[in-house]
Image (tube, rainbow over the protein chains, first blue to last red):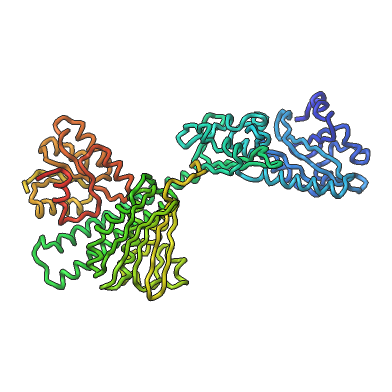
Length: 482
Length: 125
């Protein structure tokens, strides 16, 4: 285990360094060490005696660290054999030359001569370094041309590269940042290149980077520019490993799909049996029996709607509902919806009026229809027989709007913010009386949000409510590359 | 409506019974049932039906696989297949529709209109 003399000499010549073994005793010391400790040698002493405020774990922790991890300097008290002490900075690192492993190098520097200001600024620097090395995200800083100036320990671990292989290299070249499928960003779409040229922060979700072992890692990457004198002088790039999150999402997806199937299979049998009974396939039912079957039927339908709504909402809320965007004629869409909702409205004794003017937006037809239908069926539910509902579409320079207006009981001020929450109803009795799932408005709001629009609510108690979907008229300029 | 020969494939006994009952009683069709994809392949060759109505999710051989096998064997390659799915997902339904099957029916279905829905999908008159 003992190091050879030649080796020891080479390592220690440089400065005030202690070479310590796994038992934390000093094996050898640099020439400058005795001067720090009052002219006495430290060889043979435990480093815990020399640095009494430190503990085994300060060294043990260091030994477990990844070889690329930064060895954070510790500010601590060093004790001389005469009982006097001095403030020292201690950096511990693995002794790679120790043949059997387990040895450590402990670099000391005497801080006792520093002024208070110098000490303070050292501490600030070391705190900043400590933070950078403690975070689990990879953090890089690059210069204006995108070359790496700094990489934190997590960056080295994530990419499986040594720090020395990273510094000075172009970041984009090293990480080969690409889309989820591995296809590369073009010069016009590379988030880092764009940020360095215009200074706007960007976030690229569900992308990948290349590790040294040629595997691609799923990541979220964000970059921000560093400004000096009004110019972009470089950037900071943060990369978060999302492998685990993606795996969880996948499992949740599978779970939801199983739940969906397991719930809908018995519903199919119940719905089918009741449907045939109600349809008189096996003879006409007595009036009371027919009524019971109708109740069972409508509740089965409600249950099955609830299952679909919960699953839809789950995916919408997680931002995982695929959207097929296309330019839509909103006025035509609203006309179709009015026709489709006509029977439900007349059944409730509610007149459906249309006031549509030509309006277009870019949206997913299926989902936007769902959002509008949910608003309409909500309006029907809360209108009294003999009442009416108005569907209005408008278009101005930037915004296309779709309003659903009712003259129902209105929504009190204190309920307005929560009305878009799941299972929220103005009155707790509503879910039983009105037969809604309590999810319709939440789904509508989530869909509109996913389409980069918003839903506004204007309501007066006793007068009625107007829900308005506002969508960008043309595709908004987006800096998101996800 | 002309009487047709239809094979109903579902591993769920109740649904198999319901679908068969609905197609017989309301549509007046000649219906045979089986509970697995492999049974369906055999029955289809033997009976050469006008259509196969089949659940998507079945153990061992699922609906899409069975549909592909039916399309792959010469005797049954022209028999139209309609898949039934309890999936609520739009994109899953579209991907099923992309399999080259004649149609996709959502569960829960309405037994009173099932025959008509099927006829519309298969352009039966």
